Length: 314
Ligand SMILES: C[S@@+](CC[C@H](N)C(=O)[O-])C[C@H]1O[C@@H](n2cnc3c(N)ncnc32)[C@H](O)[C@@H]1O
Image 1 (cartoon, rainbow, N blue to C red):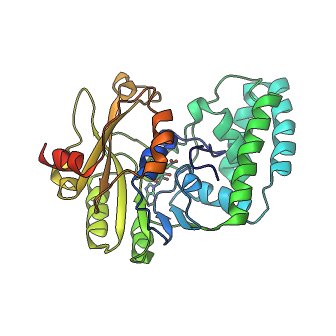
Image 2: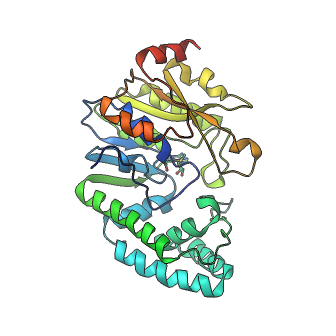
């Protein structure tokens, strides 16, 4: 695989880390040969771009796990996705937004992985959000021509990419809580944690609060192998108080990242992203190029040992 190309997965979400992948890749130790473990897989955007041969990808959202497990088992193929999206796309075009809500009701009663894909790609801003009853409650993006041929081809190619990757590698998907996943990791593995950002994401399905942040901290503290944690550091209005409270006992690297989703003005402002590691992170030479590609909207920082020392002292 070309190391500089970042492939986009078929599922979207507000917390997707596509833009941070080059940065994350650049700090993976070059002698890493174990399994890449993600307790908070989300869309899989990070794992699918890491050159690890083995990965264990977990999440408490059963629909994400089910979707990728079906691709791994060839129950969902690019051909099946194409046929399904062309059929449902034509219905959406002729019936309009009522068809979106029809598929949403069908998904909320049957949980079909293809309906999950349809709703994810035709819902408002590609968000994944559930109400208190565990029902997907994202409104329609209001574009009845959503599944035009070019868009269907784009999604089919994304499914094709994941499908080929899962055939070539040993990737396992599990629906389970993060503590279970961390417990199953071994010394040679790297755990990459991308939990819902504390004080920023609201989702009834996956409530995240101080209790979980502290539990994650305690679990990672006990882990003897290497971990990388994504979190937010600060924005123009406030800082993430859990950096000082918990994470600053590890190494904290920072970098600017823009969010474009979220109703609140505050959520549209630049967020300083942080990567917390329990090892000394040194940028790998061969990842520098891909890193530069993704700096158009983002300030660069040198995440060398010296910079880490500065961050730690700040
Ligand atoms: C920020 S997203 C991960 C995004 C991912 N890195 C990506 O690029 O798409 C956080 C994920 O954590 C999952 N999650 C929330 N609470 C969890 C828990 N207790 N255990 C495991 N996963 C959880 C959510 O379902 C969500 O998919």
